[in-house]
Image: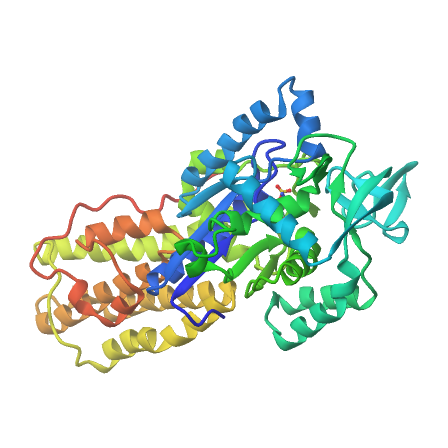
Length: 512
Ligand code: MSP
C-alpha cells in the first residue's frame, strides 16, 4: 500500500439515470469508512465521489423524462450529491463528468493516447449493451426469451455498426499480466484478481473508444463527429478531480496515484484492465489498488434500477438514522462477497451489537458516574491485572487493526471491535462495581476509570463506521477530536469536567 502519508480513495461515479439505491449507498459508505479510518490514523486523505453523466443510457433516460440531458443530469446528480450528506460521507470533492475541468482532462488523456500511437480509426461491428455501456463478444451473449442478452449482467444487447476509434488494448495484455504478478494486491480480493488474470490471458481485443450514433458526450479532439466512449470518459474522473493535466498541481502531485479505487464487482473489467491499460499508454502511474466488492442482494438478486427490486436506503435512514444503516452494511455484508439484506437482519444486528451491547454499556456507565461520582471520571493509575489486561489488549491489537484496514479486511476489523465491546460489557458485569460502594471504593474507582477509558477506545475504533454516534459519545466525555493513537492515551479524558448530558445513543428496533 501507499508508503507516503497521503491516501486517495474513490468510489465509482454513479450514473444519474435514476435515484440512488442501496448498492450505491454501499459503495460510498465502504469508501467513507476507509477514508475516515485513514484520517484517524493521521493520513492526509482525499476522498472522491461523483456522477457519470454522459452516454446513450443517460441520453435515453433524459428523453423519457422530457428533459435535455443536461437538465436531467443536474436534477438527478443533485440527489446523489444530497445523498453524500444523508449518508454522512466525508468526501472532499464531488465530481461531475459534465464539468469543464473533467472535459479538459479527458481531452488531455485522449491526446496522450493518440501521441503514443495507441488510437486508430476503423469500424466497429458487434454487440453493445446500453444498460451496461459495454461491448460484448459473441461468446459473451445468450438468448433469453427471444432477446439477445449479455450473459454476465443479463442486460439486452443491440447489434452496432459504426465508424469508431479503437484503443490498442491487445498490445497491453502482457504488460498488464506482469503488473498483476508483480503487485499481488493490485486487485483484491484475490478471487477477483484470478478472474481478471484468466480473462487477460485468454487474449485482449482492441477496444472501441468512440461513438458516432449519438451526441451526448465529450467530442473527440479534432474529430467532432465522434464522442469519447463513456467508460474512457468516466474513468478519467479520478484524475480530473486532481486537476490533471496540470501535473504540477498540488492535488495531483500529492494524491496521484490513487491508493484504492473501491468498486462493485460488475465494473471490475473496466477498472482492472481498461483503466491500467489507458494509464500505461498515457505513461501515467497506475493506482495502487482496485477493490471489487460484492453485490447487495435482495431476495438473492442484485438490487438494481433495471431489476426494480430496490430497498430504499433513505427510508431506512428516516426510520432508524444513518448509523444503524452504516453499521449494518459494514458488519453483516462480507466486503468481498455478495450479501443479502433484510429488515429482520438489520433489526437483529442493531439490537444485539449496538442497542443491547455497546449502547447499553455506555448508558449504564455514564449513569453510574452521574449517580456516584458527581458526573466525573475518577482518575487512577492502572494497577489491577484485569484492568490492565482489557486496556492493553486493545492497545496491542492496534497494529493488527491498522494492517487489516490497509488490506480492506473490514469484516475482520469490525469483528475484532465487536469482541472488544462484548468483553467490556462482560468486564463491567463481572466486576460489579455497584457492590463495592461501601466495601472497597478504591477498587470501584479503578473499575470506573478502566471501563470509561475502554468506552473511549471502542468509540475511537467505531468512529469510522458510526461517526454520528461516536461523536455523541465523545461529546458526553468532553472529547472534541481523537486520533487512533489516543487509544494509548488517557489524557484525552477530562477528569475535572463533569460529563455532558446523556442522550439516547442507539434506539432498539422493534419493527416486525
Ligand atoms: N458509472 C459507472 C461507474 C463508473 S466509475 C468510473 C457505474 N455506475 S452505477 O451507478 O451503475 O454503479 C455504480 C456502483 O454501484 C458500482 O460499483 C456498482 O457495483 C454499485 N452497485 C450498483 N448496484 C449494486 C448492488 N446491488 N450492490 C452493490 N453494489 C452495486 O457502474
